[in-house]
Length: 98
Length: 148
Image (cartoon, rainbow over all chains, first blue to last red; front, side):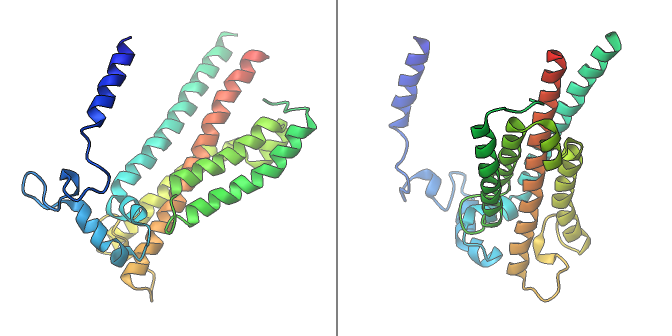
């Protein structure tokens, strides 16, 4: 019941979203609400000349925001390490009990 | 699943499908400059091809395919490739992860950034693949210990 109400609320809120590619929408403006230039317009204009890469998403992910990607990779590595360490520890403890 | 499947259909299908999934994973990593894709997606595809063999075959075969002792060390190598590319750029006088200053002679700055992105995507792909396989191995070992 409450999930249905929440879904209806979300659907109602989705009607207020701007259309995709709407030039008048706030997210597509070159100047943000606080009066500072938005980074995405720089990415769109300079991604091809900066990194010689037609795929803009790759340039943003691998070059402009590479530090973020490094963090993501470290998170995945940490998850693997935690899995390895925790499960092996449990295994060792069980072996000691037997 | 240390004993593998006894059904010949599963054995044949996994044996035929796994190289193609691996090839597609390589394509997704190395074609990430021109089409949707990149290290994370390609690494997940490579891991899926290895895990498919692990589900279907017996342990002797899939340990020849990808030994579980290599899981965590190769993941560390993947992270170190990414970090090393950034650190080389730092040593050469730029910012951290500023690929324009990588020491490859005779290549213009935009091309250097192109190859820098390719290098880090390979590192991400290697790390994601080996870590996913190693998580699968660790969970499976637990399962087999209980069943014995």
